[in-house]
Image (cartoon, rainbow, N blue to C red):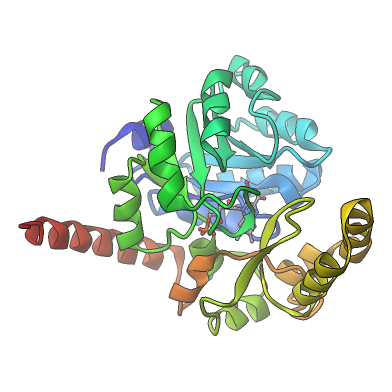
Length: 319
Ligand SMILES: Cc1cc2nc3c(=O)[nH]c(=O)nc-3n(C[C@H](O)[C@H](O)[C@H](O)COP(=O)(O)O)c2cc1C
């Protein structure tokens, strides 16, 4: 495959592993880059010192391009960016904040900048801020997502119609057929989180991965729309959040949510495997995933299924 995304990053396939707090460290990012995609170290859950360790390890595991995802809602994002630049990282995916915040600074340091958006309006702002590419992420996606509930199917063509820079689709893309669908909608690349979480190389706890094998289409929901919307696996903690959301409003709701969230819920859930009281981020695509393969196996399967989908479409279009 050779298109604007493979050229931009110098990779073989336009497949990106989304940055994921507590899940995408050096091992996962390096495995994805080695397989021909673009691996991203998820800096969101890392202090700058830990991020430096992961970057050094990833570089030792793969000589192929590797990037860093910096969610801008954390206070250490500037330090994380400086740490990554100092270690030679040239690809930055920023998210959860304004694309204007660091784009010029990063570009003045010779970096490639991509920003994640969940609406056509923000996509336009990304292009105006001078980013090199956009990730448009639908409401089905795991992790933090848009308040507007715009699905991937609706979002990608809308964004394609208003921006000309390379476009990466995200949200419920976990197979060759959904990858083909994203390209049909106008995307130049795909970013996957949920599928890569369910691999041997991800640092999600084994309890979490195994419990997800039993997930179905009722297993996830977006919570905390009033504060920071996030798609979660529905466990005891998520049900408690649901109850708070039903019973409180306004500033009282915000306070109750903050108090219940406390600290380390996401770490305890995703990294340490507390399936009841931990926060477990995952996307709707989990209902399609019934195995925990290696990253290499994921690439082989997706690429084969993608080709099969194209063949099927070309042989069945005689209306
Ligand atoms: C466990 C988990 C953690 C995530 N953490 C982040 C993050 O730190 N920064 C970010 O930009 N996106 C984050 N995301 C979103 C992914 O990068 C990706 O865009 C999303 O998972 C794509 O949708 P999918 O889950 O349907 O594949 C996270 C997703 C998951 C599942």
